[in-house]
Amino acid sequence: MSVEVSVGELEAPKPRRGIPGVALIKSSAGLQKWTIIIGLLLVAAFVIAAVFAPLIAPFDFAQTSSGGVDFARQAAPSADHIFGTSVRGEDVFSRVVYGARTALLVIVTSLVLSIAIGVPLGLASGYIGRWLDRVLVLFMDAMYAFPSLLLAVVVSIVVAGGQSSSFGGILSAAIAITAVFVPQYFRVVRNATVSVKTEPYVDAARVTGAGTVRILFRHILANVTQTLPVIITLNGAEAILTLAGLGFLGFGIEPTAASEWGYDLNKALPDISNGIWWTSIFPGLGIVLVVLGMTMVGESISETLNPVLRTRRKFTVKK
Image (tube, rainbow, N blue to C red; front, side, top):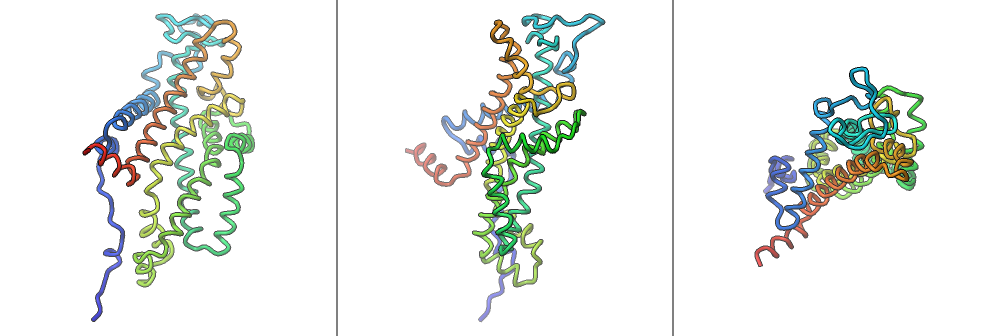
């Protein structure tokens, strides 16, 4: 007696979908619930400031005059400039708001490029194996061994090529950060692929004549990317720090091309000794709050997706 089983019946069940933020809050409890709420609020404020920067900022990020009158240099916060002005006479509040837009563009571009490169390479390496796996693992391990900021600096120097336009500067910074993230996605997806490529639903797909590409992206991909949301969120925070580090060291985006928090912090260093605090504290506060928000969201997602922690939390609440 034989029993016919279709490939679809052997596939792993798909999780129920819902609004990510709401579902995450509903699945949380106690302190973790407040952590995810605060994190989501900080991330939402960051995204809103980035998207609506031209409407929120009273001036352009490089504007130093209005109505034919130059702004005062290093002026303290006032009604005209609520965050004061910089050493170049720019409105600090406008630069902070436009800095959020620059950061968001770099984060999105670098994460999209990292996923588009790292995930397919990880799938192919883990599933095909042999010499392809050995070469890719060796190359990715070599990249992963580099200090992340040093690797980003080297790639930024190579890619920049004297680009001074806003898009060119953002793209070169995003590519530099992509070089840091690709090995992480490769390693996670490759290890997960190695563990699931012998599962029954993969064998069934192979027996029915499915090609390698179909098996990778139709049957394996959905079952090896459960941890990617956590990595993406935490990498967003790391991208902010790396971008700020590049700008602080002078390898980031040109100041005339886009506003960038790390560059503003570098230019504000001499102001601190003179008691001029506003040129450094507001860009620094932007970095801290965004990184804090993304980290809180990432850690909450990690705890929610971890079955051990989720079971332990439910048991504690019931008790």
